[in-house]
Length: 195
Image (cartoon, rainbow, N blue to C red; front, side):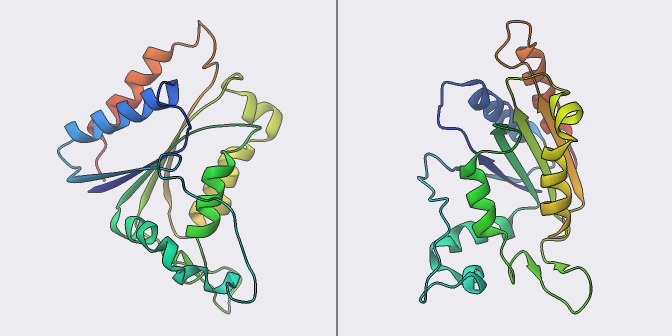
């Protein structure tokens, strides 16, 4: 299994970075994971802005030469892991900009004459590791599970990715947040998960 880890947080001295390190450590100890690539969107200075004009059209996003490296990473990966905070009930704008540009028509999906498109990223699995300041159940109780619905139904299922797992960790700024226990949980999962 080949694993691409997409990290979206601007600080390397943070709990999110600690989660990234546990994902990497678990993957390196997992005998079913052959290779790992890490994409740090902030370190990469990824530009999340969508720009369209007469020379750059939305329908041509799938062949934008600036995105070729990232398309190759997604094509290469069997498993894609996203590590990010939940801000205002959703992933950061940086990650959403990555998704907007990479999960494009004719690369991630193809329009058909039917009701739904054909997902072109079939067979890949996805794991989302996310943190938030509020309680763990906040997105479910107050936001009707908007984060998971956005990621699983509106994005991953749309492009053919059916195997999706979430780690949503709340209370991460609290002294009673059980941070070490949650870090260990992520490490254990990645050290044992089989594709």
